[in-house]
Length: 157
Image (tube, rainbow, N blue to C red):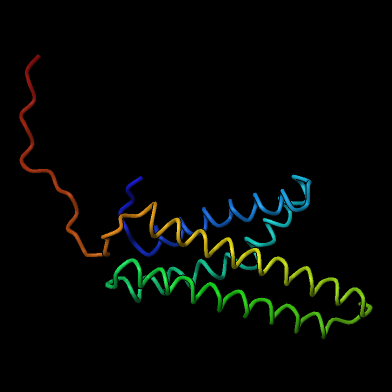
């Protein structure tokens, strides 16, 4: 498939591929489609939505670089979002009242597993996006919009 490279196209493609990978893994790991789907939605809401914004902004900043450099930017921002969101939620769990220590540990492990699934699926999704879906030599350039030349006269039939 040939997509015109752009920051939002790249971020959307990484999001789509990585979410499908996360869904497949979580359904397989939980052996239940409903539980796997709920976990994949959690990955999308808690991790991939903030990561999409970071990918799009980073792609816009580094749009003049080669796809390999944008791939590395995507990996770095994915790792930063994974660690940042995990730390945010574990800090929130520590301040939450009404939870036992066992419940805090369970939720912390759940966020860790979800964060790891997010990171690995995004790493694979980035590789698939930048090296298979998009053109290899594609750099983002400003191109003029396609305009029609002189219109052909209509036949009188």
